[in-house]
Length: 366
Image (cartoon, rainbow, N blue to C red):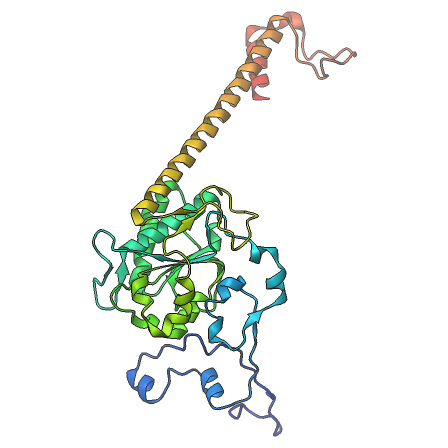
C-alpha cells in the first residue's frame, strides 16, 4: 500500500483484504538459497498470521459431506459445517455402487512390483494405476458422469502412467476420460464430486509427510473419496495419523454394492447395503470386464430389436401400398375417409406403367 502512487497527497487504496488458507500448500520455490535462508517458501498470508496481524478465522465448511470433512477438520480450530450441508439431501445419500462414501483401499504388489522410478523422482505404481482406472470404468458403467470424477496423484510420473492406462483401456469401450487426471499440487483450489486418489509410494512416505499436502488431498472431494495406497506404510507416519486413523476404521478392501446399477440411490450414508469386497487389482479388472461385456450385449440386443421393428414397419408399408395398387386406389389430395370427390391429377385412362412406378416411389419416399 505504501508503494502506490498518491494523488494530491492521498492514496486511493485504503484497505487490502487477503483470503486464503495457510494450512494448505505454499508456493513452490525452486531456488534452494531463497527457500532455506530467506523463508521464501512461506507465503505472505502465512507470514502475516505468524507475525500476529489481526485475522478472522472461518469455522464452517460448505464443500463436503460431514464425514469426509472429518478427515481434515482436525487441522482447523472448531471447524463445523454450514447449515445447507446439514440440510441438503445430496450430502446425506450414499454413493450408488459403493458401500462407503470414503474408503482407504490397500493395493498390494502388482505383478511382483510396488513403486518404481524409471528416472529420479519419477515415481510410478502400476498396480494403483490399473486399480483406479478399473474403478473409474466401473463408475462410468453405472452412469456416473465423467465430468464429476477426477483422478489425483502425488507424483507426475504416476499422473502420466494413469493417463496412458485410461487411453489404453477406456477407448476400447468408448468411455470418455475423466474430468481431470492431475497431481494434488495442481488441483489445489479446485474440487469435484468424486475423487480417486493414488498415493504411489510403497517404500517411503515421501513428500506426503508434509501435512499441508495431505490436507489438500483429503479436501478436494464433495461426495466421494477413495484413496489407493499401501496402508502398512502410511499408518506408521506420525504426522498423518489423525487422518489415517479414521480411514483405517473401515475395511481396507474396496466395498462395492453391485445391486445398484444406477447413479442414484435412496440409501443413506452409513448404510452399506449388500457388500461385495474386491480382493485386488485382478479381481476388479475381471469385474469390470464382465460388466462391460454385459453392457455390450445389452446394447447389441437393443439395436437388434430396433432393427427388427424398423424392418417390420417397412414391410408393412410395402404390403399396404401393393394392396392399394392392386385395388386401383389412386393418390388423392384428401384422406380416404373423406366424402368429397377429389380432383384427379391426371386422366386415369392414360396412366402408363412408368407413372405407376413413379407414384409408388413417391409413396415410399413419403
